[in-house]
Length: 599
Image (cartoon, rainbow, N blue to C red; front, side, top):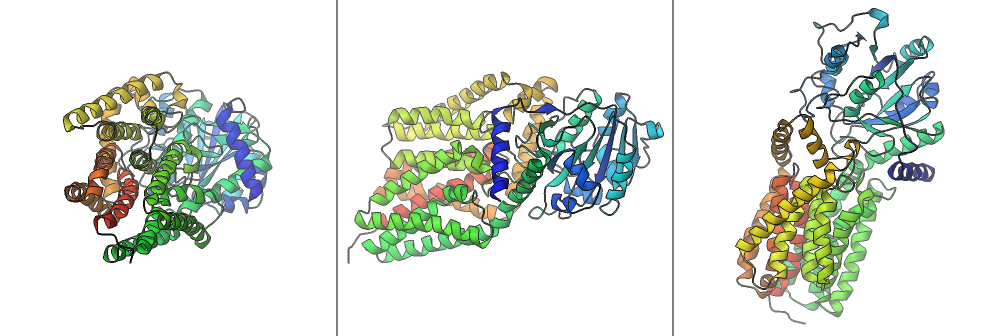
């Protein structure tokens, strides 16, 4: 495990800091694409010859983002089109584009190939028999070795062979695996396949396959294509194989640990609610210290998830590591509150600030964690996820309220955070940039002015919103096309396709917002809880001084989080993470509404 991690770090540093080691995928006069469904990388490694030879003398990688509906031969493999995340509403046009540029295609296989190419059995693509420019061959795990042995033995020097595995044997959301992708040929060096789509050495996306194919054949890439041509990173085969083994194992860990994490989180929430109830009934120093410790410990959960996810723990051991981190924070908070009840607020503020810093600046920690970047499902591969938006937003606002932060530091952070969030070179989350612009502008009005007003606050929010759009539009337009992500890609597609790209994106965002929100009953619980806080806290502020003092921070967080819910396709994640800090500060404040006794 240590050796694999060392390989990962070494390759990651090289890939991130320098592109000089990468080279384009070599062109070829003829391509052979062998498609074999139902394999994982460990399964492929266990096969006999010629598979070991193929892996030792090829550029290899792991594939993400494949449509599970291909199991039923209904969907598309790669989106040579709009990139809509819908299973069967868009038909692939790979074969049509190849034919348009006078490239002949031949198939030997079943309906899986027709789904990939965008044809049907009634639309034959075979035109020149064995002399076709692109040959697609379907194989099963049982016939793969024989198929490869035959093709490799007769393959000309100017031909490249692809081995493509669209789906693992498990296709469920929580069970699917990354699958192998291999490029073999005399002109192909040994090493890793890399892509600007994922920015992760050894990991490529299914949408990268079609543009790579076109690049090898020397034909133009359609402007509507959402992927990017793959590149090669030459290296020793043993290092490349070790890298993929570690990558495969690491990609599974978030979903394997999720149920164990949920048990810990539910237990902490239950303890926080019980101890808060007991503290309201018995407002003694001891009960308040216990309650403060558990609540502050619960507020450390997002930060703990960032850190614990980097450790090589799975299942129960991962839950124990998370529990240990929360317990450590809870014990510190307990003794500090026992010494001085007001110190719990200070510790909560420092936790909020540390969480916001980690969520915005700890970019590598997002990958393959419960807070985002599930490589097996191909949702996001790099940048800051929607969970991170909620952490940065609420963490910043409550740290601003609970700590005596220098005004200049707050100004710099409020200006830099939205731009870092939206930049393709960092957060790559345009919706997050607009969310932070809105929420932090609201915070400036309610926390930094003596007499805040809704009219002036709305003006600040609108100005911040437009300013971020303007600055990001300029900065993204200066970047090379292959370095743009999210908003940068949208600008590039609008230049090539037109305003249709914007309307399609808005429609897709709305569809995904509805889909993600209605996917689980838990989402409605989160929305109901957050709406209750949004309505209830201002009412409590009319009666209790502690809530009146905290109301500006609550209002700014509510405004920013609801904006984030509307601006991001999985905006429920923004609400969920903001709820951690809103709920934590609320529970810390609640006991102070009742008389305190030391009895």
